Image (cartoon, rainbow, N blue to C red; front, side, top):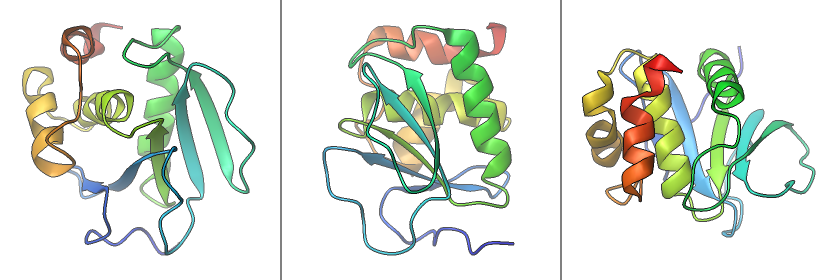
Length: 144
C-alpha cells in the first residue's frame, strides 16, 4: 500500500469513511510533497500530460460536466482508488468544479446529498461549489 496524503497537507479532505483526497487548482504550482498517483482533471479543454495516471472530465469553468454519467463513473473510480492511492481532484482554481466533484464524492461516501456542499465547505474550503447549478447538481447526483 502506498503512503496516502497527510490530513494536515493543504487541500486534503477526509471523507466520512476516512479516505483522503486532495483538491487543488491547476493554475497554482504543484504542492510540495508526494505527487498524486491518480488525478481527475475537471476542465473545458484537454489538460497537459502528467507523470501519473489521470482522467479528464470535460467540465467548463462555472458550469457542469458535459457528460454527467461519465463524471459519476470517474468520481466513483477516484473514491475507490483513494483507499489505496494518492488521489487528486483538480480544476483551474480549485473551488467550483473541484468543490462540486468533492461534494459528489461525499455523496458516494454516504453524506446525504442535501448536506454534501456544507460538508465540503467545512472540510475542504468555504468557497467550494460556486454556482447555484453546481449546488443543484450535487443534490441530484444520486439520481444520475
